[in-house]
Length: 216
Image (cartoon, rainbow, N blue to C red; front, side, top):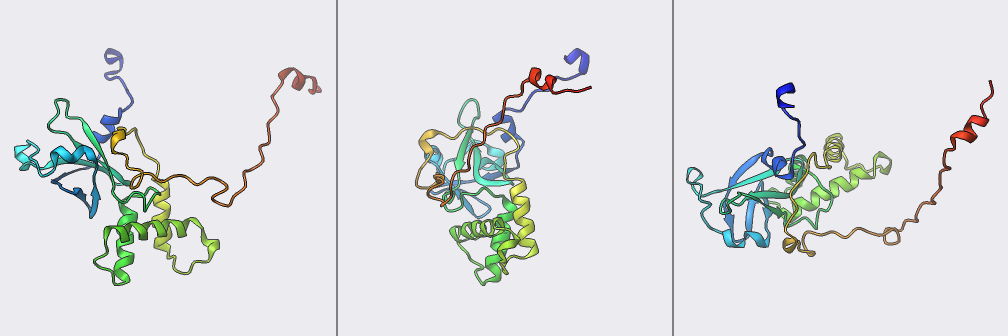
């Protein structure tokens, strides 16, 4: 293939996908990694808190990759491992904002709170404001919500359009999944007050019977 075409197209692996994401160099503090006014933490980071990464040209900071369209987790490169693998670190407030959203919705939520006089809003307050924005936008124009502006709907629309990851991602360490902070159990139909739709089976296509219906 290389001799014929010059290259061999191959799908990206989970690690390749993370390598191509934007990068930030951060300190790993006792409460985890702070990025864009959000806190990311997990048990795997414990040995590296307030430790030098070993990267002298970055003054001991740690390489952190993030997805601008999904604030739910970041990836910290383990500079102390031989293979330089990734540590998947979830956002501490993931439970309070289960719907995935990106930097656009996050910054817009901060602007909404600032207009309300909450210039120093906490991380949890911003997360709740972003979640409320997406919930209200999800009800659509028919809801008649006067608080929804054109920009609110535009931000929510772009968030929905980019909510699905564009590539594979490394799987988090099962030991770091904290049900109290990172898992959000899905509602059943009964809990959501909805009834299951009736299943209508489709007939199996029979080519011979179909041919008998032909008239020339």
